[in-house]
Each structure stands twice: as structure tokens, then as C-alpha cells.
Image (cartoon, rainbow, N blue to C red):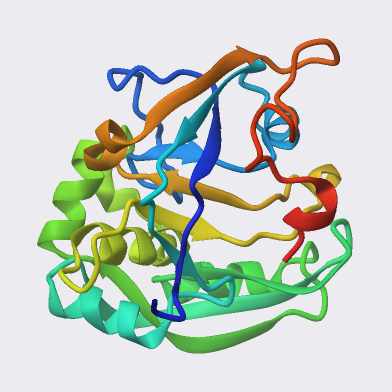
Length: 236
């Protein structure tokens, strides 16, 4: 198995399983079904109610996405397959003291807009850099129109870059992936926990093995669903 693949035979979805549910304005998970192995945490983070489903597929295969940004082979594949193309962009790096993170960034196509944020008192000690950004090409724009309610012309470089592993995993011929997995830090208080997505085209290969409300009296546990993830094992 590739270093960038992972198998999870069971996952949870919190919310609606209806394929005709309203599309989002945008999602880093594309148009697929959001899943996790720590459903109680994601019910608290997403605040979409506490109705959940346990889904099982012993032959599942997820693309294990890097948290440091798309890997080079993913970036190159998306450029070569008409999802994106490279353009000049501008990043404003700044300290995020509220979230306790050393450095974050905003990315812009327009230099004037970037310089305005760089000069703002809201971002002291920021720095501005010229970088290689990505903009949508034909397949990327078509996907965006089908998946989201927002206009693809308003897509930001950060949003576009976030979709690269989804596009690669869903459309590459290298593997037959069910979806993508992100090993986010298990820190629900800061809205972070490991998560994944199952592609719409793969949902028929997953069985619903549990359904219920997530609360103190009726919640999936390790005895009922052996694949549930605890706080200790969720952290990667």
C-alpha cells in the first residue's frame, strides 16, 4: 500500500445522509460526505445536530492528505489535468495571537489588496511575499459550479489549494479511492479533529451499520462499533 493511503473500515457521519441535501457555499471536502471517527467531537464542532450514522466498508481506501499543503505530485496532477493553473499571488504572513498560533497567512491575487492588509494595524509585524498561487481552470470551474453555491470567480487561492487532494483522489487513475482523510490535531475546543470525506460516487459501497442520536444515554461505543476513535487515538 502507498505511503499516502490509509484504510478505515468504519466511520461516522453527523447530520443528513440525503444526497439531495443543499450544497454548501464552499467546503474543503468538496461535494462529498463528511465523516470522522470521533462523532461526538464533530457534533460539537459543526453544530449540525447530533443525529449520526455509522458507516462500514471493509475494503475502504482513503488518500491520506498532508496537513502541510498538497504534495508536489498532487499539485502537478491538478495542473496537468486542467483543474488549476499557476499564477502570481501575494501572501501576508501574520501572528495569530488569539488562537495561539505562531504564524498564519492570507493570500491574494491582487497586490494592492495584499498591501492594504499588510499595512493594517490589525496585523502588526506582518510580512508580504510574492508567491505562486493557483486559479481555477476549466475542470476546476465546472466542479465548483456543481458542488457549491458560491461563484467560482470568487474562489480564493486558499480555497482552491484546499481542494487539490480531493480532485486528485477522486479522479486519478492511480488508485480507486473512497475519499480523502485529514489527520487534524484532536483539539475540539479549537474546532479541530481528524476528519475525512467519502466521494458521492462511492457511497453505495458503504453500509449503514448504526444510526442514532449522540448523547450520554445513546452513543456509539467501542463494544458496539469497534472502529470508534477515542481522544487518545484520534491525535496524530
